[in-house]
Length: 118
Image (cartoon, rainbow, N blue to C red; front, side):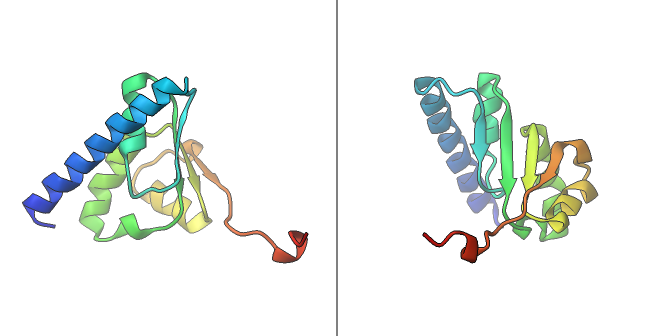
């Protein structure tokens, strides 16, 4: 990622964090829940408001390249109070990058379609 793309990425996250923070205040939010590990704007907004933040990790794309993962996951950990991992492998990825296992909960994706028929 070149410097211009990185600056654009950071600006977009900061802008999204401001929008989330505004919405959280308007709705009297008690926590901020993000449904992707690929963004940290929810955590930034939560920190700014003094609210707990949860990241639902739906994949492992942030694990590559490894040097980026080492930096990114540590930063994500600093702005996240609890991680919900979609699999044991995702929880292990977080643990391998220093996330305390007490902050990790595994909730597997998927529902048996036979049980949902209406």
